[in-house]
Image (cartoon, rainbow, N blue to C red; front, top):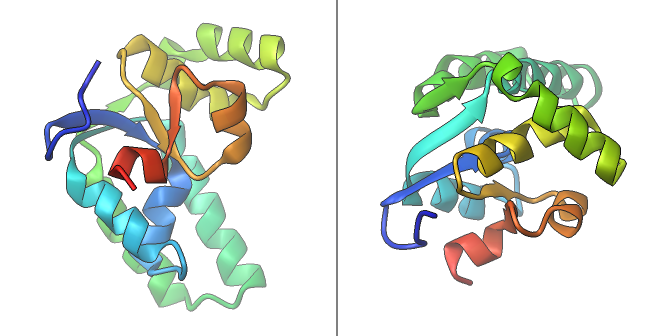
Length: 145
């Protein structure tokens, strides 16, 4: 598994880390940016694109996020991914994880990818951290805080 050294890490990063970093969401902005800066290789399932578009849509609709800010995020987030893995490479494992742990499959795609690549999924999601401690770590642990 990758070590938590300086910018030598290859990890899977959860959708909201990208969102918080790109939009500068307080109080998560600085940590989210630190995760992206520390990570040399970012691997994501291709479902991350749909999740990001959905979050942007929700925030524009309900949180009154300016459309321009959402478009900015779409223009810049793709460049953060080192590798995008097709969901069909992960879906059997993701379904198995979902059924065994009573957790939504859109999250377990990320967990399956971390497991497959023998690395960690870095997230703010406490339920994921609790249910999948072997594959998932919290932001503070990843940053060594």
